[in-house]
Image (cartoon, rainbow, N blue to C red; front, side, top):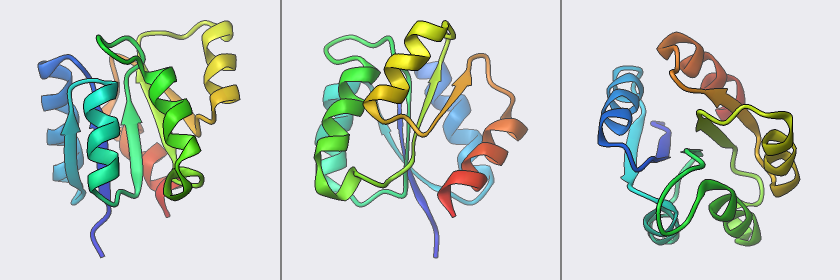
Length: 121
């Protein structure tokens, strides 16, 4: 069965690179442009993993993460952060909010797929 991933990033070029990588590996992809868009799509679709940026307009990735974890169907879904943020403080905030893992941009497509494969199964 094909796995579906919700990707969230306000950068069209990053979304394009992520979608290209994920679709090339056989995943179905739903795209969102920020946290608000992602929350709406998360309520409309069943996904197997969320991959989100942190710094976005309207709703950032940490707020999205916290809100998703309050939804019963997202309590155990892996949520990976894909961001330029890499300080220990922001990672601690991500862990506290329920992040499954952390990847730093620019991303290595091979490493991205390895991490996803590890947490999505």
